[in-house]
Image (cartoon, rainbow, N blue to C red):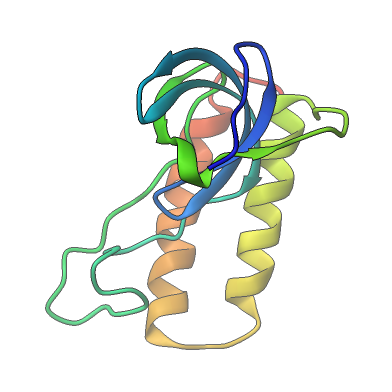
Length: 130
């Protein structure tokens, strides 16, 4: 397990998304990380039954918000040394990348995931210029 310091920029997974953040507190086996940018948008649907639409609750999963703080196990935290993109721009790119990935193949899951993504995308941009 690598050791990081308060203020370090790091890349962290959370559920099925990936984020760039800053360590704000050491909490024994976890770090409290403040989210600065989105690398990969979370998958839509049921995380316990990925890419399934039948007999599952199909969840809409939003990306973590800018400056949201989240506890992350130390073992999955990796250093991040590049420039950090503006949160809004990173979110927009992550959504576009996920949408493009879903549009490649016409499956029941991809259709439902695109609907969910369109719904949450509207909420991302209400009153914001991203």
